[in-house]
Image 1 (tube, rainbow, N blue to C red):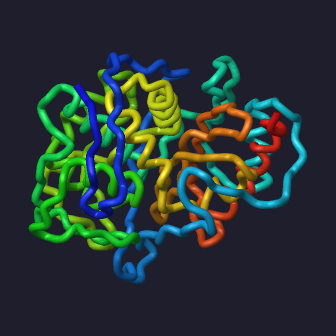
Image 2: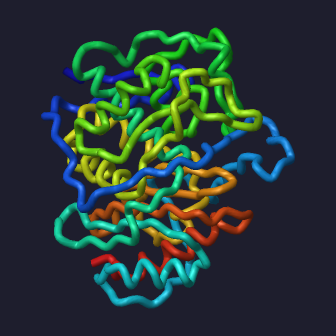
Length: 341
């Protein structure tokens, strides 16, 4: 059973609590979802090559972590109302298309709005959340431990946007790999976990908990050319609907290691998208994903009055001004959620 604390080597001051024993459960999906298969995200430690297919660079917001302050402007909306019309209007106002989105209240079920949650858009780094969940299930089963050493394989090296200790031969703990993959979106840590867990095993675990449209089929590349991956068998898939279901299950502590995942998401390094549209007192534990073809953000939004929502936005729009457009979308949706009570 999961218990105690794990100390990450990359930051000796950071302790991640492990979740108390919890009963595995299948996720309840609002609808069936189809995954996409476009080219994966690149995140770079060095400037990516100039190419029409080059991978985009993450952008950081002015604030970081689970307590993120948003923009000052507050677009008007119907207080307390979330529906597909609101999500669509927000997308039009932000100039985002195509869009796949889910907003669902999770502290009091029954309020949910969605736009095309089955839309086939490549998940980019959003796939890292189900990989972490699969790893922590293996820890819960006793097959792995968060403190065990994993040597970084030279074949998994690729570029990262954020500072990373991942070098060939570096001995990371399993807990460190999971934390870097989620909080820094580290591609090398992700590839090492794919090797450790096995892509087919990750996919089987996702299906076993109800993520029927999620699959891990290839490793991630931080720049062109793509990393050599002889075992690749297609493109990764994790649509917005599956992402929303997974975030809801994590919030409800229905999955082993939920607190480990939530802690890493709350320390998110990349805060330049949906957090731009939040209000003072809002907290957002989330994950982003980008390629030259797609841009995503999603996670668990906690308002100052305690209301909690899953918010997931996937879009095929990607350009230098896409990130602030996420803030515009979030500000409009946030207005629809009403004032803090």
